Amino acid sequence: MDRHQLNAAYCIKCIWIIISLFSYLVDSWSFHMYHNFMLTGPKAHIAMADSVAAGALTGVKECKYQFKWDRWNCPEHTLFKRNGPRANKEHSFVHAISSAGVMYIITRNCSQGDFDNCNCDVSRDGKFTFQENGVKWKWGGCSDNVIFGEQISEQFLDALETTKDSRATVIRHNNAVGRSAVYKTLIMRCKCQGVSGACTMKTCWRQLSEFRKVGEYLKKRYKRSIKVEFFEGELSNGARTVPKIVPSNDISRADLVYLDKSPDYCTFNDTLGNRGTEGRECRRPKKGDNPFDKHAKGSCRRLCSACNLAVEKKPVEISERCNCKFHWCCEVKCDQCVENVEKLTCVRKEKKVRKEPES
Image 1 (cartoon, one colour):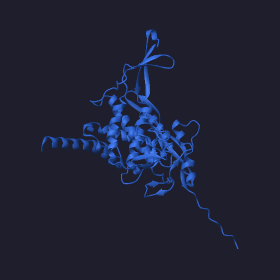
Image 2: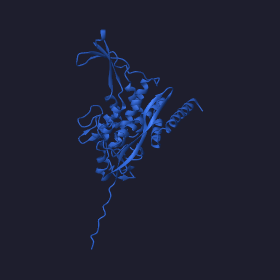
Image 3: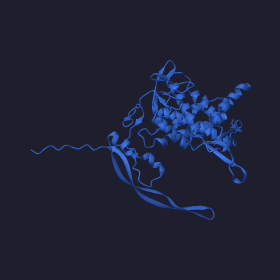
Image 4: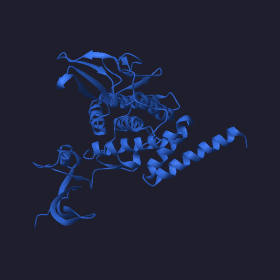
């Protein structure tokens, strides 16, 4: 076996080690998806493969959070199927959020020093600008290297689409939308400089926001996603096409696009993998509930009433740890608190039996 064959064998061994490390963290659907990531990515970036897998998983977790109270709730068994024409708006979101997740985790791990070939983004360092209030500031510090994260995300994910057909073109477009979402949600951190605390000049740098912000941004884009057609190698929305460089008034690089109409997620359809909404839990937020419950607003109407299902109320007991206290040394002791809550579930409506009139 020559040197090149040994290197190839070593690369494959590294890939499978990474796959085995992640296999116990994810379900079978994720495993096959990551398997594709590992084998398609450039060999020069095999060391980043675990971060790519973690990024994709981060994206799917966020997908499940954003759609928890929707009819389609990002079910694992329907994601990333390679044997179907899936190009509806829900799968457009999946590809975008996964692409964003990979870019986000790669960028974050780069900033933490996990990669030898990645450092801070210093491309703007030393450049001056002015804010509206006249305070002068310059780029400096250690900006998160989103350019590096974008490149790795594109190389791994876009490489999965080896054709130039309509479906692959839509996926590559939505992958790019996901990466642009990371840029659009960046936050700027600044440090004041000046005599006696006077902020006469600032040094500023760019930093990743919480990934939840990326998810919220893409959920808004999902709600405004555009149905397109494929013509002569380009995506078209009526009279205009998706631009390669300059955005048009109809479709821009920030727009999620799709080809196929979404199915009816209310009803069970084994062929499409739809489980329907029967048996799903819904919630009616109350005053004082945590912020997450804002997503649950109207969920009983969406999941039950609009799907011709009834809302069943059932009292349940929830037991959880509470009143936790630290005891020296070194133990945390908690009480077990029980709370009675009302669980709401979508169920089939009972058919009223018509009584025959007595003769």
